[in-house]
Length: 216
Image (tube, rainbow, N blue to C red):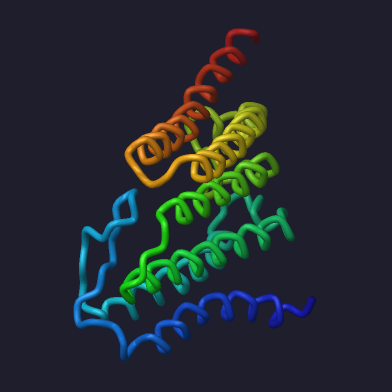
C-alpha cells in the first residue's frame, strides 16, 4: 500500500469525530459533560468550545506521538516491527476516535450505557494483550521495568505472560459487561482487573529476573 494512502487512513479516523462534532454543534448547550463516572453519569462539565481541543488533541496527539516514537528509539527495535507497529497505531487511533465519539454523543445529551464503554476498553486490553506478546525490547512500548530492560530473555517471558494476562483480563471485562448492568459491582470488578493486569506482570518480571540471576 502506498505510504501516503496508509497515512491517510489515520487522518480519516482523526477527522471523523471532528466531523461529527460539526454536525451536532448548534444543538450543544454552552456547558457540556466532558467527564463521566463508571456508571456513565456525568461528573464534570466544560465549555462546548473545549470539545474542539479535547477531541482534536486526542486524535492528533496520538498520531504525532506514535509517529515520533520510532525516531527516538535508541535500539531501533520499533522500526523493525514493521506492520505490527502500523497495526498498533491503527488500533490506538481507532480507539481514540471511538472514545471521542462516545464523549460527543454523551455531551449532546444522549446517554450511552457505561457497559458499552467498558466493553470497548476490554476489547482494547484484549487486543493489546495479543499484540504485547510480539513486542521486541525497547524503551517506549511494553512492560518496561528495570528487569525487562536488563534482560531480553526476561522481557520475552514477561511479555508472553503479561500479554496473555491482558488478553484474559480484557475478555473477562467484556463478559462481565454483558452479564451485569451498570453498577458498583461492574465498576469495582473493572478496577480490580485493571490493577491485576498492570501490577502482576511487573512482579513477574522481578521474580523471573531474580530466578535467572540465581541460576547463573
